[in-house]
Length: 199
Length: 288
Image 1 (cartoon, rainbow over the protein chains, first blue to last red):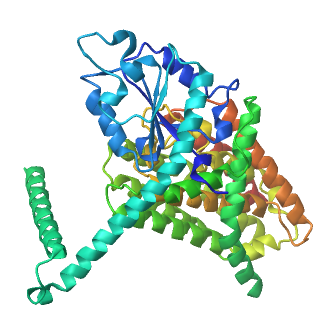
Image 2: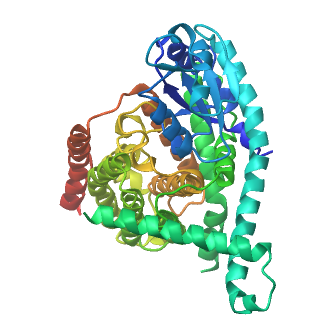
């Protein structure tokens, strides 16, 4: 009953669009289409968002912004490109500053074509994204399980360290040394940043 | 003693359910006021269930701890209230809880949540005088700060405290962050400080914040009810009626007014407190 697909929160980002698709995205929330009946909320905050709606093409200035927004969104997440510009670059494709569609910087799951995309098409895209969102949860659970397992094996390996000499050097030992090497490099990075901050 | 333990347990268990339902009704009625269908009634529960399942990304681990403290102090406030203890102490613990929320959003050092937090402090300054006036009013009318004695007074406090009641209803709008005063955070997107005080809260942390809000709303509605109840058990029904009217009024205000500047909010809320609650208490002091 409490499926996550009942509450998809949307983050809307306007790349370099002509604003046509943005007006249509907002039209989805008006009384005529009322996207909120599916539990859809237009949040302005990537940390609270589940679905990233991108309108307009990607140019060299907003590419890092889009990437950062995507990285700030917690898993499970879905990306939906709205309008032909976000899908391929559209009419701006040959402009000197346009890199192309949203999939040039981040993985896009749903493409909603149209110029401008009609509210019905956008809502259809979001509903498709919502189904995918439910599937992504399973992937996220797997990821969490793997992550926790790795941490546990790390800890147990660390606890068994004195006995290591008796054991033949297997994969775990290798993995462990790799992990510790990674950790060391991470620590070093942390120290560097700390120093930088002090400066 | 046994009654107070039962009511505390009932508050701890039922307040999240009641608070969530209140928010669901709020969103449904708001949608109908805007001629929309609106989300299902249980939408707030779906939202919180989803938030608990999402990946936790937070800038510092301290945020979760501070939000948990906010939750614990809010539950403590409500528990003390429904146990019938000192109302003044309740309000002080409520302020402590609000301070933990302030720290939870400043600890991230994000500019948006820091601005939201400083605005939250201004909101606290705006509503605190009326809260204290309400406590003083209860003492003048019923001769005690103890909530169980206020609730078992021969006459409902609202008859002697109409001005204080009006001022309290006014500041509850600020406390619930409803529309003219949704300055520190907003329920809607597209504002200048992203989500204000909740900008850096995602997943589990936002769920904690939401559940705490539910506890707080139930407590605030309890205070509204305290104005009405007296020793007659039937007064609890009229208290429920008054609570429903006040909540509906809050939704109506939320949907019919635009946001205010913080300085105007401060001026207006202090003026309302001084004129309504102040004159009410002044007259009471002259009479008694």
